[in-house]
Image 1 (cartoon, rainbow, N blue to C red):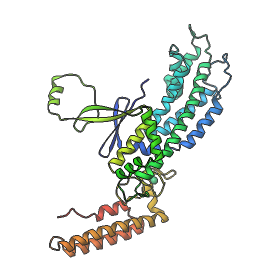
Image 2: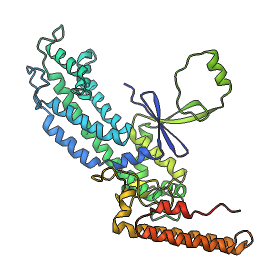
Image 3: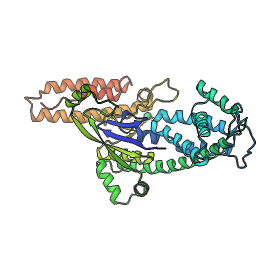
Image 4: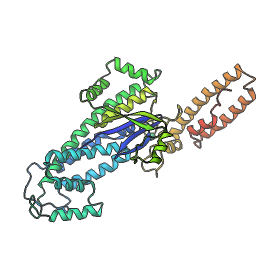
Length: 402
Ligand SMILES: [Zn+2]
């Protein structure tokens, strides 16, 4: 089974190929989603699942039964669906890696000619009992009889696949956990706006990491290079297009193509999500897309500007409000907001002041004073929590030089 994932970048966007379709996300989406996952918790859950579901001595006489919730495969299938739902909500690639573990498990324990058992296992994990079709198929399977099966059907194949799935899941979580620790170290060093080396640009810091044998980078590069994890594939696309739809050769389509401009676009390819997370991190370093930890939730995000302190993630139990919306209403964070706005204000004021000094005819002092009055009024609104730093910035921004 082909598990290759495609990822590419353009400007402020990230593009992935999922199920033949190209999807567009904000740049850094995969990286942030990967870092948002509490892999330690998932590692514990995988161990827990293994304890509950792993059956050492498989009874080959037990019948297949989807109505018994205590069966190992029923417990594992329920957990699989929950995990898929949570990870898919963060990024499609993250859900995909769980499904890949299911595939690995099924193909590793069930011989090729067990096609039907493969299908039943996938159906049970992925769909049952959410779709009426899967419910029907399970009933049919339980009653089936044929060359390979005696009626009713025994369940040991499913038990074996479930055993393997729980083992594969633990291994996956261990790998992700270790990689996240390395990723966080590299982020803190090279991409964090508030890092120890914040006065250097991210490409300079990345280079420094490279030449100083930064351990997390050495480990990551070894992992990717040694296992040849990262590949690349170039696609020829129409200007402004990242999709490559299937089209027929028709005179209309040919006429349309004659009017198009084309460009070569590089997709990173890998079966291992870690290689793609790293590729995105490196891309962001080289393009100076520095990140910051949200002052509210502590997770990395790409700030809109130097004054952005909070991310757009939805805060739990807040009726769908984001950190950016919640934080300014809370007093402690309000002070932080006010400080950031003041810092921004004083920087802009200096710039404006300098313009007035250098070219008083072009930049009359009256305009400068009016701008200051307006900004001071807005600062009071930030103090009171009724104006966000982002809105403040948008309303005091200086015009381009005349
Ligand atoms: Zn946040």
